[in-house]
Image (cartoon, rainbow, N blue to C red):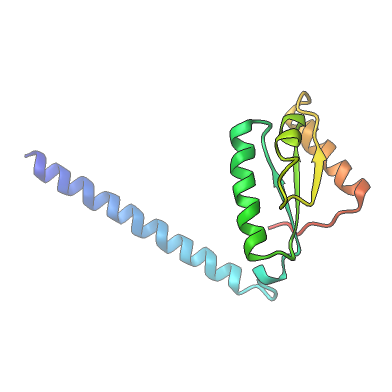
Length: 127
């Protein structure tokens, strides 16, 4: 009895996976049919938002080093709090750091970050 239920549940999970894959393919086709599709080779600047925690800083450091190893021409900017700033100070892949006030509310943090980017006249491509 349980084997029948297990096979039935497996069939439902596989059907859900096929539907999700079909939707993903459809959305990808919509994105590539745009007049100007995104080309990763055109990327010149990356903005990384890092939570103000040691573990997140370590993961971001690994990511930045991998990006710089493959594309040394990309300028990497990190936006985070003061703990991340001291943790990332020795990272050679980091080009620019934007300090964010971690005590502000999340919506205020994003507004402060947007103001800082506008003030420094930094242009990033939004995906």
